[in-house]
Image 1 (cartoon, rainbow, N blue to C red):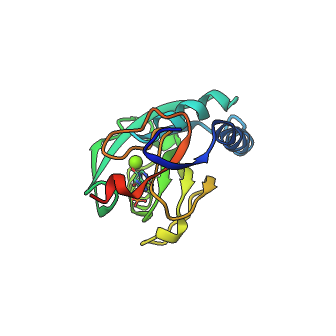
Image 2 (image 1 turned 90 degrees about the vertical axis):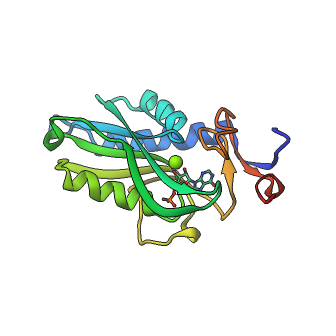
Length: 182
Ligand code: IMP
Ligand code: MG
């Protein structure tokens, strides 16, 4: 385990099982010619989750990317969301968008992006998150697909960062508070 972690919250095996389960749910829910599933990865945190998820989905799937910034100080967001890489698709009205996010905290990012892509004309918009911290919600938001509900702890690894570090860890761990409190 990395020395800056107090413990591992989700092991490689637990993550694999969780993502296998979500992929099976998506295979079931988006089966058939009438669907055109487009996974939209929210950079950068969702990149590992998205890569694993797309390998496990067996129905046809397309991918795309967006990037948002919510100006914050490391472990807190301000709630103001800026789209810094937008989705450029000409056929949004024939796309069933699944926004793929690493973690839901206040709920502001996914609430904003779902509304944005719906207004932009997507045929359907659903959301999928690997991790969910419901106790931190500031806006009423529930994802359609949730990997694991976790307690109010700052976690890193499997794409998630603190100050751009720890993204490449193959598991999700709880960061020692002394790393971000000074
Ligand atoms: P929300 O808009 O408050 O739901 O923020 C979600 C975003 O905050 C995520 O995409 C992460 O970038 C970041 N975030 C929230 N909690 C954590 C955490 O525990 N570790 C790393 N990033 C987090
Ligand atoms: Mg993020």
